[in-house]
Image 1: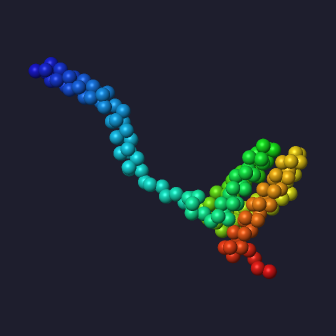
Image 2: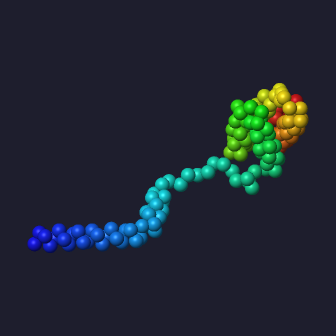
Image 3: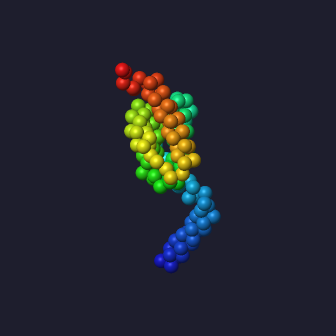
Length: 145
């Protein structure tokens, strides 16, 4: 009697293991999807690029072109500050503009060894400054006077 129960349980277990092996990948995916459904959905704070103002997009484009040049010449801290300011500009425009203006203050005094890259950086900083100032003026963030 006991032997029959043990054999029955073992055979049932082997059948279940066989089914799990056959359905393995799809079974794991379905369990994974169920696990993802239990997690809370994170709300993205970052605005989609299509929702940003064209002037802000100009500033972000100049930032994207400026960062690799800064990294190439060993100004990683300046590039990181520029990256953080651009992220803030995408999330909260007013504080991003203030952060970008602080970074621009440091970038204006930056000197590179290569004269060609120096001209490119100065041009990009000028473009970025103009775009940030234009957007600040549109949002009425600049002090009057």
